[in-house]
Amino acid sequence: MRIREIRCAGLRGGTPEGGWSNELRPEDCVHTLVAVHTDEGAVGLGSVFTNDALVRAALSVMEPLYRAENALEPERVSEKLHQNTFWLGRGGSITHAISGIDIALWDLLGQATGQPVGRLLGGRCRERVQPYASLLMEEPSKLKDRLLAVKAQGFRAFKIGWGPFGRRSAAMDEAIVMAAREAVGADCKLMVDAGGSDAHWPNGYKWALNTADMLGDHGVYWFEEALHPDALEDYVKLRELSPVPIAGGEVLTRRQAFQPWLESRAFDIVQPDVTKVGGLSEERRIGWMAREHGVRFIPHGWNTAVGLAADLHLASVFPETDLVEYLTGSPFIDEISSVNWRLDQDGMLAIPSGPGLGLKLNRDVLRQYTRGSDLFD
Image 1 (cartoon, rainbow, N blue to C red):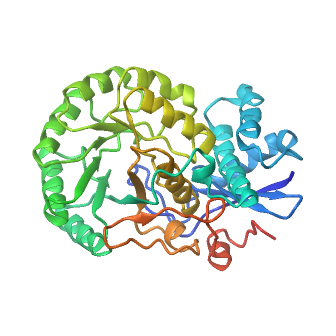
Image 2: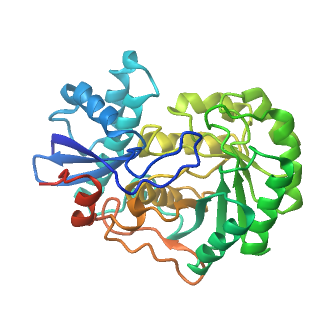
Image 3: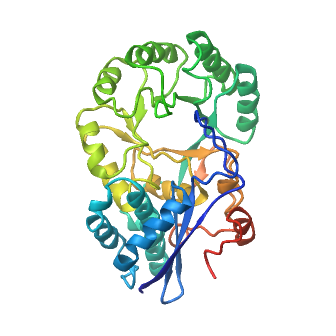
């Protein structure tokens, strides 16, 4: 089975707010789907956390490298793409685009063998996993109402992030967390994401340590992106002194970029994004590296239905990966997939058991959000 063509299509018209200083608009494109077509007619799906113009340019650059390649050898083909494009800038748009290609190739291998991707990645440790609802922070009263609505959907774990947190006052920060804890209850997991990778993040180490102490008073499960994404030494000190686990790593790409952070024990929980780091092949290696250094591996998943499916399969492979991120209210998760992401009575999400990613997209809805672009025909 050979690669005949790779197509991409950006998602627009339903882009959720990101909480960024330069806020996203519905028409902005931050997620791009990839379809790898083969000479035997099979099509594999991937997802990239990057604007479609950048993915399209990257595909054009790499086309001579992947054309007619064996579509059933994802790790070898992805590594070939990495090795032959280093001079274009490692870890940037090229790496992001390789992520989508790699996910799609694993999807194809699963289709060809009749096996779910998780089994091909090493074996399934679980058949279901707990999703945590990921949503933006708001003023305390509004946030409480949103959390109550999401809890009514069956979620039992929640992450609140960005918004006014860390940007107004310590009193506002604690009021937000208190409202969230009251809404979800003492028996649910509550995580806090400061959004330290935002443009011109105003806070440093002392703010992060004081805030961690406050979060500990309210039983927060982890504190995410508390510092600038390059503040390695401060992260090491924060993790040592914080009463709550420290999480981060979503902006890092390539497994080599994660190595110093893991060796330094800068995180209790590391969060690579499969749609950025080089796909399933690279993220599996990062996950194993994390285990070797005693760091929990919980994928970052602010992306699409395809990215969610990839994260579910990763969660099936790693015994300690007992949570996946679920971006609430995004049509790029809830609407474009023909899979019904239904939580069971325990607030758990089934890991797809069909061949490949076990995912099919609703083509009519997909055309709406890709402005008529056709990934398939």
